[in-house]
Image 1 (cartoon, rainbow, N blue to C red):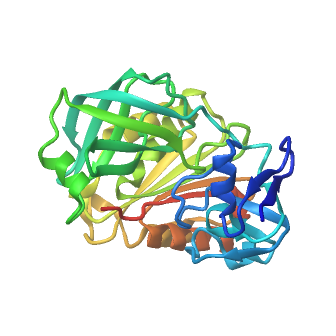
Image 2: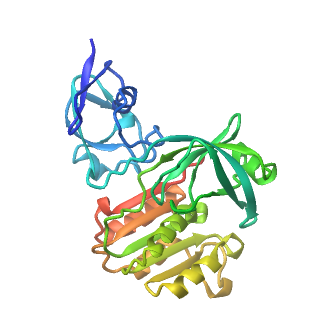
Image 3: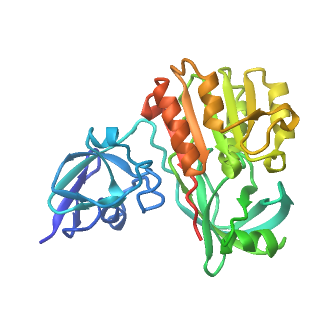
Amino acid sequence: MPIQIAVEGAAAPVAAEPGDTILDALIMAGVPFPYSCQAGNCGTCKCELVDGDIFELEHSEHALAAEERARNIILACRTQAWGDTRIRRLETEELVIHPSRVMRCRVVALDDLTHDIKAVRLVIESGGPFMFSAGQYAQVEFGAGMSKHYSMANTPAEPELEFQIRRMPGGRTSTHVGTQLKVGELVKVSGPLGSSYLRDHHAGPVLLIAGGSGFAPMQSILGTLLARNYPEPATLYFGVRSERDLYREPLLKDLAASHPNFSYHVVLSEQIGGRGRRYGLVHEALAQDLTDPAGSKAYLAGPPVMVEAATAVLEARGLAHRDIHADAFYNQP
């Protein structure tokens, strides 16, 4: 017997079959709702359960913390509805939903940023225009069976797309990009995706924490923020293994020179004393420096273990979970 799933603020409930996930039912009914991984890893589809008969499937603790679950926060993609259910969107005043696009793009430039990270620049040939918020990502398909999520490193105002792709051991897609992709080839880009994007209405300090190629969305956020002559402090913590893993520092130096409110810290985890850099884990450097983050927004991207550790530091210093926007880079084949 069909059941109904209602989203507060939506025109009408949608019909579903018992056992359908809330997200699947909303997508099938064409209800605009934020989502991304659909696997319980990213947290994009978090919402508040108002009432209903549900069953929650396995999910990552990073995507949904125990403290959130105690407040009836659930993941729409990992919650089955077994009776009439009502939910409420989170952060409705900040929710930004851009038109979803599937675009044909062409590779116009390939640049080696490090020994294992390549910048891929694309022009959109059809399917645009592509509107997104700084910090979001897209599904990028280089050929049959070679599709993966990558963050846009360009700002929304730039016409070309840039993705910073790290070659992963055993990764078919990233190995293809690192060794075989050529200028002139066609690429399919679908998106935008992700909820760890720049909050345009925020007017306080900004903290950016990146690990490795997690710098890509930070580049987009920084470029967008500083182009507005943002007056509040903006601080970047960039964690890499060693000097050879560091990239785009000339850009960071230029931004720091032209924007006195911007500063950055490079933290090396496997090289002591590299050019006088700080040594250790990036969340440890954050913990040493951070005293009172009141009024700040934090944006994080990189390996899940780094994102989780830095999130713990921010929360321990008193930053509310709603002010922390994280994109953990879970490995994909």
